[in-house]
Length: 90
Image (cartoon, rainbow, N blue to C red; front, top):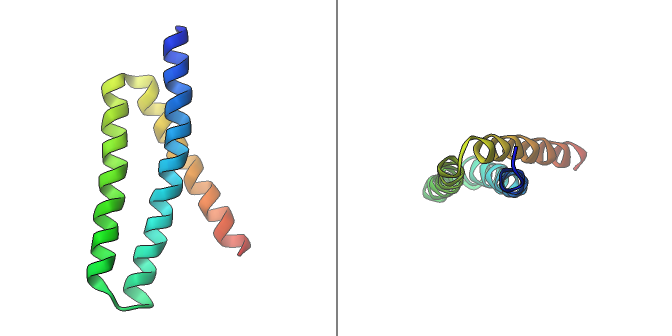
């Protein structure tokens, strides 16, 4: 693995963690909007935003190669775990 691939992978991992945190925070906000507030339009808008952000980042990483794509996906999983840990401790 070259140094450039290593840097791309590290950057994609950090980006993936951030996207994972935002993705699952928006999931919670959308669920709360639908179930607690009864605001379907807000929930749909948050869902579109959530998927749009995640898909855009993953497609961008895929265009850079396999290593950035896989490390970004790993980062999203880490972001999910961090979000779940935070929710369970609250």
